Image (cartoon, rainbow, N blue to C red; front, side, top):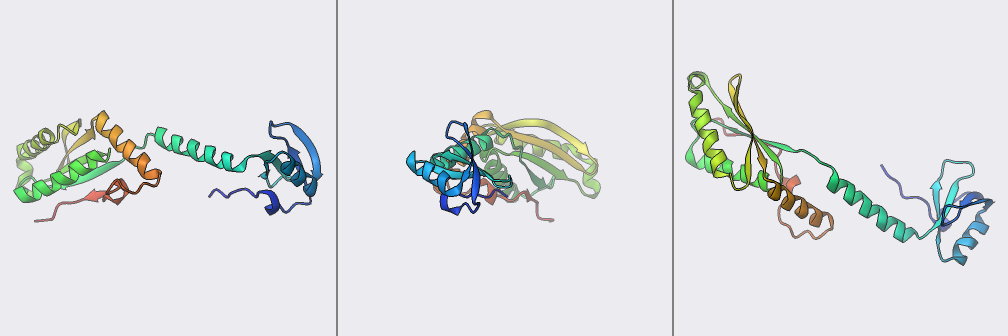
Amino acid sequence: MSVEPRVNEQIRAREVRLVGPEGEQVGIVPLERALQLAADVDLDLVEVAPMARPPVCKLMDFGKFKYESALKAREARRNQQQTVIKEMKLRPKIDPHDYETKKGHVVRFLKAGDKVKVTIMFRGREQSRPELGFRLLRKLSEEISELGFVEAAPKQDGRNMIMVLAPHRNVKAAATQSREKADGGTGSEGESVAELPEVVTADQA
């Protein structure tokens, strides 16, 4: 957890090791002297190393420092490649209405810039009809082709069949841009990715 540094009158030490605005070492001075120097140059006295003895303080524009730090943090989040994989579970003989509902979830996941692991669950004699799963997955991949593509082709995994869908680059870029606007506090982008369920399972009909 990050804790905001003490600034100006919040600093408790009697004396501090002072660093100038350009990084120059001023030396150990009484706190009152450091505060006066900060006031003289219209800057803040910021405690940058509170655990040092005496603590290290630097003369800086604290408001500007906080603003630039927030920009750097946002840039780091944007550049961080976080791979989120949602999961959608279907039955090979799923009802058409249920299929449309589940496809709607897949569309929302892809629009949010997330990958989707689609799992077909076979029961009993259904395991002898893998073509049902292939057919359903092919249909789904074709119907969402404007938003995503098949990153991992359908393959049998025990009693399940799995396929991974990934959003197209332009779709993911649009989702990233939407997230950045949300980070800026606009609150007008509608439903956020965080509100989507991590796993959506089919009803066990």
